[in-house]
Amino acid sequence: MRTLHRPIRFVLLLGTAGLLAACGSDAGSTSTTGDGATQVSATFASGSGPAFTYDTARVPVGAKATVDASSGDGSTTTTLTVSGLNPNAMYGAHAHAKPCGATGDAAGPHFQMRQDPVTPSVDPAYANPSNEIWLDLTTDAQGAGTATSTVPWTFPDDRRARSVIIHEMPTKTEPGKAGTAGARPACVDVGF
Image (cartoon, rainbow, N blue to C red; front, top):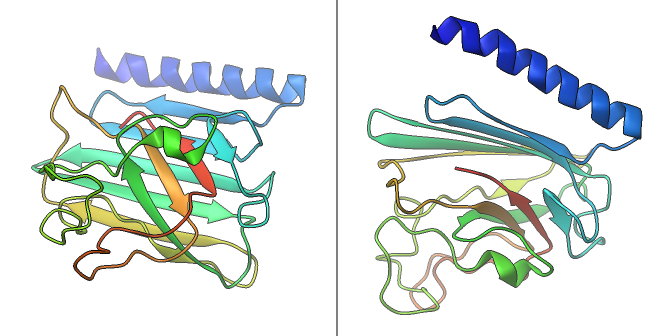
């Protein structure tokens, strides 16, 4: 039975891609396989999703992002791949607790497996790459980059990350600043 669902899903994705192409839209696509894997591929636009840019100087309209996330065997692996960003630039990126919205702040705080009772969370005991999903990257000369994070946990059924925020600078790790990475120039909705 499971093998019958995969071809149908593939046909539906192809049909959706065809409709988007026919309408001249390249907003994005999302697929969930039901086995703990999700992929979102999207083009950044101002004011609309699933990929939002709030600072077109840092993340230009038309730049692209793909987020692949999979969970199983007690761990979660997430990969962020971008293109069309500023060349040779460093960005922070993290999974966030809420979906994207009109501003980067709409995505709320970083998703933490073990939640810090203090907000904003800047304690390295909570704001760290084992308790959060950190996807910092440096783009190449063409503005492309990739980062992968594997954390030793899977999302509980009642609490999941909802987006990936691209931040203006790499993530800090020192006490009092841990987890901070500056402004939020872009956001991608992801159904982890």
